[in-house]
Image (cartoon, rainbow, N blue to C red; front, side, top):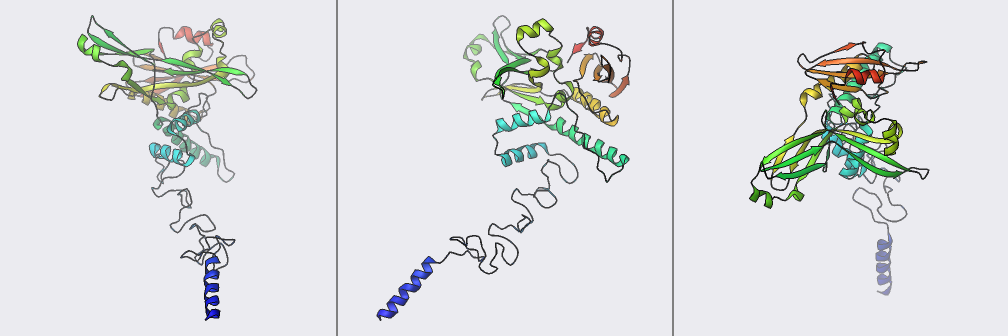
Length: 380
């Protein structure tokens, strides 16, 4: 009886000390954790490890840890860059996916995306030539890729919760006046060498310095109206900045003004963002909405597509853009090797015909000549 009791207790002790095994035969504790008891390796008979992935990193459904299959598409048929198998770009889906993968907050993610895809001296994304393709094949692929990138810029709108807005009551006309401004934000940033630089961000309403909205309101209503609860949410377009760059402010200031403002615009300007739409609202109602000018968008898109088709997508300098009547002029500055000055090529967009033409009238102009030529036009 005593021997039986000792044997029984020994069995219990050995059982309790043995490594635990899951229902697929993997040790889940001890020095053999992650090893399959049957195959004596980290993979079971079917070739999957304890986490359910094979040696290529795919699970039984054919997807890796980030949810992509061997062709690079997730379960919704969209790849890491946001394109589906037909080449259609899914902006909102990709944006949310990126935030999920990178663990970024919305604030950080939108800043990252704006800075990545709205460079003022853009090359409009130019892919390299493969040794396995002919020049003709390369040009065709390059144009297709560039147009995809252009569509990405067009569709990538970034929403900011705050903007410059003033609200004042006019008792004479009994109107609450909402004024939205183009504006600059400045901040002091320390560089890697310890120096403090003043960074500038420009927010601009295309061709305008401000917009006003008037809401009829009697004096009693105005007294109850809480301005502090009213917000403005802005929509920013990387497409406009990719073409227009920082021209709005740079050319408005001479040497003396630069010195007084303590800003080297060529080196230290941080950002330029075009306000293409906004909403003025509070928790109770939306007071005003101003959405994107679709005709202006078509003009910018046509200009960019023209550069792509002409294989002239490299844009070292921001385009100068002027508006008058039904004509929009894009002035592209081109670098001239071994010359003390660059040349200017003009692209004229007609809002009526929706066509764009190119001429060389300004080829020998200087920047001063350009400003004089367009002194009576609206500047972007």
